[in-house]
Image (cartoon, rainbow, N blue to C red; front, side, top):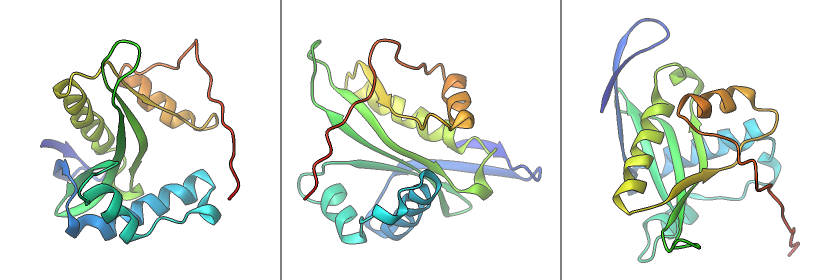
Length: 163
């Protein structure tokens, strides 16, 4: 929990916690908003049932941290785990970080990443990794403010599989 000040000068408390069943609708809204922002909303297929199955089912494949301000969910950090790599330590992958427009400037993103960092430390992870749109300069500045850095060695590649 952190105390913050809204852009309008109002003091607010940001609470970050793992998501629960009651949060699924709000999580989906923010996931869809990110899809719109990043330009893949026409391919977005995630449903509430998918989030429940893959995030709250018997063998979760993803985790979601939610950020609340005044009892409203205003941010998400969707993440998953690579169980181990060359150093036999897990790596946490931050798949999606999104803060609703009205909550930007209130340290919500900082609180989400801070809580994810605490999680990564708690499980003995060697790193948190993520991707950023090349054109998203504000996101890059935000990540730099957290001491994040672009990987100078590896570049992102993909092999698209059409089903």
